[in-house]
Image (tube, rainbow, N blue to C red; front, side, top):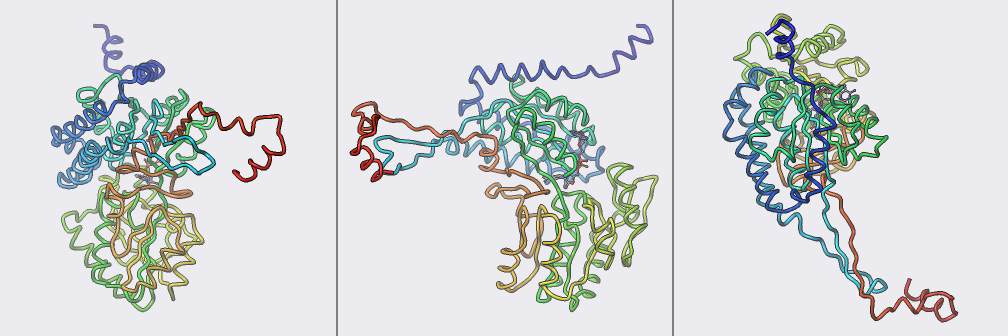
Length: 468
Ligand code: NAD
């Protein structure tokens, strides 16, 4: 082999994007993916893919993100396998026609909603839970009977490679394909004109996805981020609130779309809460004295930059290790509301705690900012809960805990406004990837419409006025 041919052999071949999409479209046109048996069989195969390869998946996640095996199993393997299992069990029921009783003036006739697969869809995954946020959306797309291109995030390359290897081994390779690559590959894919695109990532890239989809009028589902606030009212159970806030902030080093971004706490309990969050963080992060691993240099520099610019008081942590991209869990009390730490989504292990004088102050702080993916509240009072539920807009809300509202297959998960559009999980994933086609059927005889055919007589007018 010459030097050139060795080099050429080492460079992975550029994906044949138009060819891949064409192949998937041809498969969809055969009708094979519409049958309930195909859907169930693919969902079960997806569950097997995850269960059989738990250790390869854990190794990839450790390489990409330094994730511990327990968290890899819980957040990527078990969660995605459970979604696939749940969908395989229920998809037959979800697919059933939803019949409606028609109004008197629409009779005789019958009508229903037919859940129609969109066709060939594109799913662009995220790196922070690379399997859950790529193969999780795939569950809904398969349940709805589509053919699918998966584009895992290039920011978690080992996980992307595992998906590229395993998906064709377990799933129907003419119906589900993995295309690896970066943002340019995503845009080249979108330019093929898919029947639906789903993207998980940040708001700025979400805008670019929507702009790429616009010329084709491709509908988009955007699962984005934002600054999810935690309001801690004066009557809250401070002990439990502190532990739950600390734990969920530390998950994946704060690189979770639903992580508590910042806390708004009533002045009366501010010091107690800050102390207890500090104690909980010290206990939970004791095995990582050098700090938590951040995914890459760009994100690390961004987070360290927030700390160097803050006007708040750093009461815990603050140290970082640039060589290992590690940042200590850090609590900052009362930063300036206009500094970058309080403007951008943090997506790292830094927790700002902002003092407020009343619930009114907390609510107006949140509502004066873009609608978040989640809003959290700690209170014992029903009246406070009801006010916040009614007055604070957010993708989802959880009272007296964090994150768990997004882990149930029975609830829709999605953002609103800049935190996203559309929702999935369980039946909602099936619906997100299905077109609701209205179907009405009418008998031809007797032809009652004949009573109002033109020419429009006085009698026809009278009858029409009564009917409509
Ligand atoms: P990001 O928005 O920076 O996305 C990075 C990805 O965008 C890369 O994979 C890259 O390939 C792609 N990209 C770059 N330029 C592009 C372009 N012009 N066109 C198309 N794609 C392009 O986000 P991130 O750093 O990967 O993830 C962090 C963000 O994702 C946070 O805001 C977080 O809240 C959000 N997120 C949301 C959810 C959710 O379910 N709602 C889940 C995880 C992460």
